[in-house]
Length: 415
Image 1 (cartoon, rainbow, N blue to C red):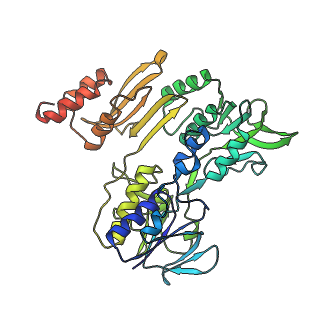
Image 2: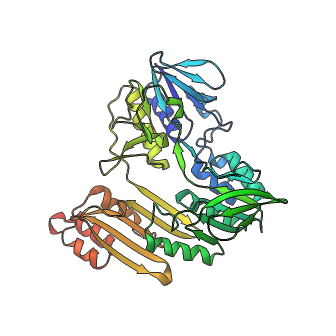
Image 3: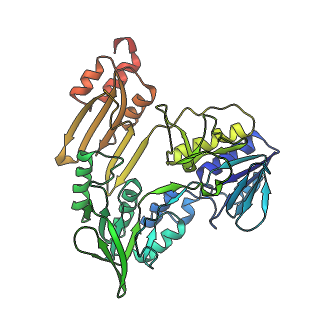
């Protein structure tokens, strides 16, 4: 059996290792376009903070790990897939045949249509090469403009502050982390970052960037232009699926897969940020976090090797450390139709808890400034444990989640 894995991120690596355990004699080829060993993008901010070296991002650190397992890693890029011929075309030339193909190509940074983004000193923060460029320019005292402060932007914000730069954040939405937080939570985050010395401009877009002496000038849709020694672009990511054009593979944001991670075309599977997979609540989505990618890769590989494994669905989950303020969101924190909410706010301590209910079940949660019992909250959502009388108690005080979990889990009939 010939297996090709397009992509060398967490989904691809886990898939390759699972394939080898499941099919000891199969041929396994991983194709990744970056020159480094397979690595985790989510570790890049820690390179910028100095917490780890570049090798700390590598998914497997033992020399010869892939070779010892008969997994070939090819530094190239798949540019076309031909299901009829069962082969892929490579950017470096030539084709490779497959019996089973896994699309684990991840995502790439979105480049908005803003004049000047190609200038020296403007960088995304998505690859190790990006990190090298940012580290070179983000010296103490440097003027840095961060475009976008969603989930990824908040992570980058943390690493930039650690380098002692003078930071200005420009966000087109009216609040920070708009897809992860409501207005109350975002206001706390805004105040927290402002108190850390960050200049924050929400409801503002970048209209252009131009060279200005030895530096850059960032033009804004509102207010005066901002000088910068470095501009970091964090305006979102998109699934890498363009090479599948003409293959017949159905794309809905990412490759649409069933519960076995199979695409709409025979013997082509998808995993990770390139896949639109099953959501815990029963829908389908591209869920771009590493734990989901790893589980996608494992389930896909088992099915590629002839096993019957079903994916149960990923829980929408975000965990952020923004300049020391921890924030988490799980499930349908915005609420469900006809559902109830409970909130607790302590502005002085930057603490906020919002619980969303679906009948007698906990459907989602948004928490700032607290790390205690976060695992319990996640467990209540994933297990759909009936809350019974504890729903009313949590409506009165949403911080009693541990008591609710212990009571309902130990004696469900008394809940």
